[in-house]
Image 1 (cartoon, one colour):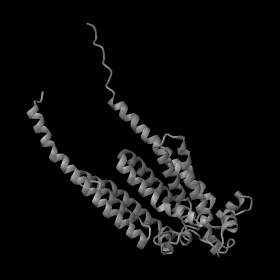
Image 2 (cartoon, one colour; image 1 turned 90 degrees about the vertical axis):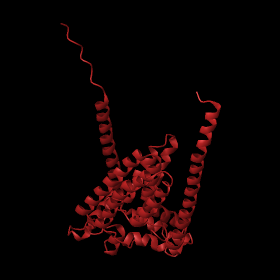
Image 3 (cartoon, helix red, strand yellow; image 1 turned 90 degrees about the horizontal axis):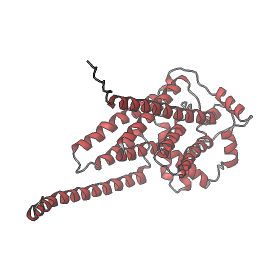
Image 4 (spheres, one colour; image 1 turned 120 degrees about the vertical axis):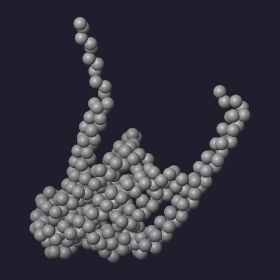
Length: 332
């Protein structure tokens, strides 16, 4: 039992620890204020970051700030977890850009013909642009489309950062799906290079198709951000990597992951994100509907396969921790 004097000594001893934690907390807040100020300046003057290397620097810096005052082990965990993941995505970006040099025949007219057959002779991209696109006027929905398209570059890494802060085990499951999905898409690009609708139109296989991904910035009075999507599309990108649509695949994966953390029936609204992304990709001339179907199938297949593997590993782990049954002693 602690006497009154001893209790006072304990209380006094606890004061420095509490004061130190308050100091570290104030320092973290100040660091984050500077961090978000710098990020806001960057977005305002240089545009929303879409390159993998820039996003990696932004996210790793933000996560490192969360370790201020919490020991070097947490800082080291940020590096250990995020550098390999970033290296994989950088490798994907650079490899994706040279797929068209492998000499595999380009699929263009055959995919366009399949798309028209699927929709009774109608090309969904052409139909949408004929009914919605106005070269002389930018509508509000063009701005929505641009924001949805741009979200592709942000949703996956931002969700990964949030998961890392909340639940590292869930982060590992999510990152494994992202990596497997990226590799599956890369392999498909190698064996089945496909031209998107806007390229098929440029090659004279169909009526003119406008590439509309970035025009919504003008409606938002952010004309200076036009080059944001242009850099993402042309710097290191492969224009004949349309099958499958990883834009849609990652949107499906984001919706599945967030939905798994929500118990409310409102989680069904998360399906609106891949639906909006699918509409955006077809309307802007970036993908055929066939690309979307295959992209969604890839996401569901990767998620299902890894979930079964994770459950099997968990079952094996439980079996190994179950003590062996006691063998009754043999009677003499």
